[in-house]
Amino acid sequence: MSVLNEISLAIREIVDQQMRLLKDLPEEVVSGRFNVQDRNIKMLLGHMVDSASNNQQRMVRLQYAPRCGWSMPDANVGMLVFPDYTQDNDLWIFLQDYRSYPMEELLQLWKCTNLHIAHLIEAIDQTKLDNYWIDYQGNKCTLRNMVSGYLDHLRLHVGQIRDLLEHMNTTRLDFRRWRLDDARRLYELAKDPELGPRAGWAPHTGVKASADALRDFLMNDCTWAVVLKDTGQVIGAIGYHPYGQSVIPIGEDDIEVGYWIGREYWNQGYCTEALNELLRYCRTVIKPNAIWGDHFIDNPASGRVMEKCGFSDIGELCQSSKLYNSEGRPLRILRYIR
Image (cartoon, rainbow, N blue to C red; front, side):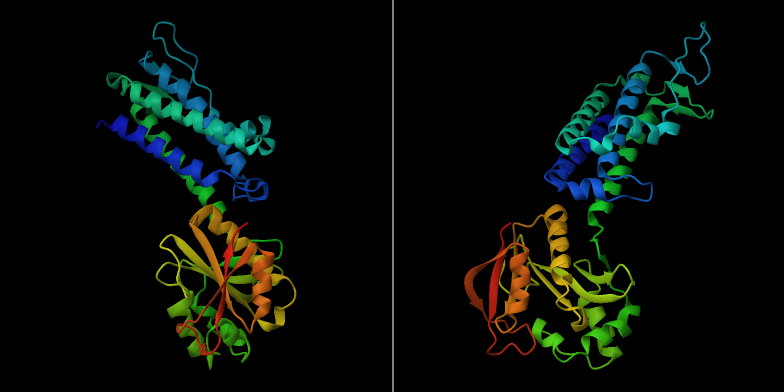
């Protein structure tokens, strides 16, 4: 397989992956999350559409003009002039109003423009790959570098979209990975004699026990600290267990969610807010076959939170030896159905 065909295939694979990832996202996710460049998902998609349209012109024209330049062409040389698009990225996004573009239509436009670029790259005359133009900064850019650079640029912005999807936050809450220096704060919350047993773990007996819990259970890719935006204070934990790590039996492509909030923050809607955001993340990023939840029958408040978030009782109870103080305390099993 030629390098051009490899690049074309990589573009097609990215398009396929992103179409599955981005379809059916809620409007607040595609419009309401902004990166450090102040771009949301719609604006990033629009920028990639603009990149495709500009690069289409360059890839085609460079195949029949051996040299292209920024300054006005010499009629005897036959050089082309390409506009300096790179300085106007945000202006292009603004003038085309990508922020208000219907997501379904914009996603299809992004798909079609990139599939066309993939087709164009496959069709490039390889004898023309060293044709070049001089950009506005005086840099020599060959058709070969332009093709490979397009794939790099696509990957960059697809990664930015994934970062926006993976970042979890709500109106009142932020979510971040646990750190070892959270041990003292974790102990302040987890020493409560009523908190841990409700969730299936023993109350922490000291900062060292909390540090051990961080290393053994909380510092992983499936668990987040729940943080109050206003204060930056950690108030609880939330996450999911994949197959093989779950408390209850689940399928290979299923996950089980779990959470707890410090007693000081009960009855303020934080659990519901946090669980809804975790479910959004799981639906859009993890995309499991099924999402399960469970709670001890003597902790009905946890079940009410799940039901508010779209879980339904499947009518089964389960005993689990993996949980602390679980003897004689069956678990009620629920499945997410929304």
